Length: 101
Length: 329
Image (cartoon, rainbow over all chains, first blue to last red; front, side, top):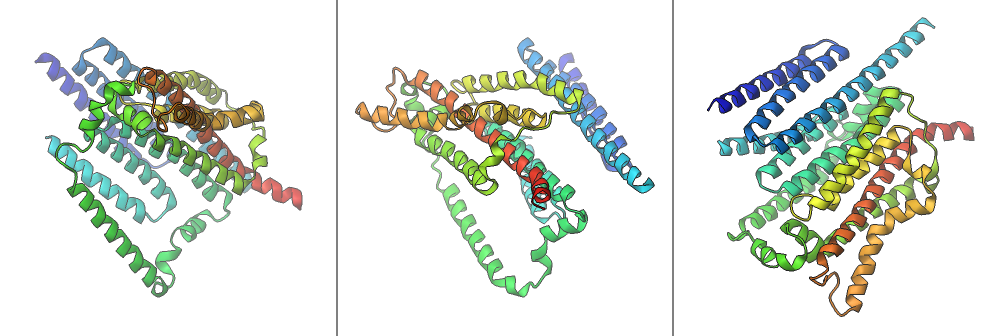
């Protein structure tokens, strides 16, 4: 019973972070802050949901698999976030150079 | 509760499909298509077809997504007036002279209606017993594998899988025909970013291992050659994007061998089985398990090589066009 309550709480907290991240993507003004909202909040939300599901399934192997899914997602999403941000910065720098020159 | 989830998924899939068709800009179309693929994959999971769900997620959202993004980049960054260009590409049909398009549109709607009617009738006719499930499961001990989907794909209907590999190879040949085979061996530029390089180096063995797991796991559960091939193909695509194009590093004959080995082995095996007095792809039950594993591994290698080559060629084709114009001038 207590386990189920904790699972539900973890899932709800995870969903809340996903919602917050989505709201950030929709409302924030520029690409960098949107990326920040998307990667930070969504990864945290996914972490909570993964923890909730691991607790729900309650088998050490499945928990390990779920945990590694979360780790891989963290790695992939932060890398793509970095690449997008770097690309945007390069675009802006070259634009500034053109305007100055 | 499950009915609620299913109906939300069904409505979402149809809504996303409509949005995908009606979106005003190509960028939106591509990203809604990703979401649509994801909704479809979830729908397949809800229907209990995990195999199809993995394939849908891997090929439709993953591989096609990469190709779409690549095409999108060519549209938006090589074209000088990007906004205008995108719109001109996307809706020349909806604005300019609608009258001359009346007939094609009518034909399209009629065809679509007919197709829907046929599909509805087919759904109506599915027998209650689940069609051929019972027949497939009855013959499972003879097939050499324990998962009915794999048994159908690689034993009972191996013919289909064999030709599917052929279709992918044919697609690659079409790309060669359009882009020219000379693009095959252009060395890429090494990725200048240390982080990207490290991440690619980290993901390469992980993807390989997971692909091999899916391939072997296909014997007893959802998974198999196509799913493994997409993961292995992803390695090739990642390496290509990271500046290490696989096909320019390995010798040409090896590349061609990798591309064709699945199809050729299938063919040779089929003929040997026929020469031994059986039908095409009628494996002897005693060796069926081993044979299927070999066929699946080689097929996965070939499909992965073909997917990598498709991406590499499409990616290079666009990059090199400006250079070629400069050099001819």
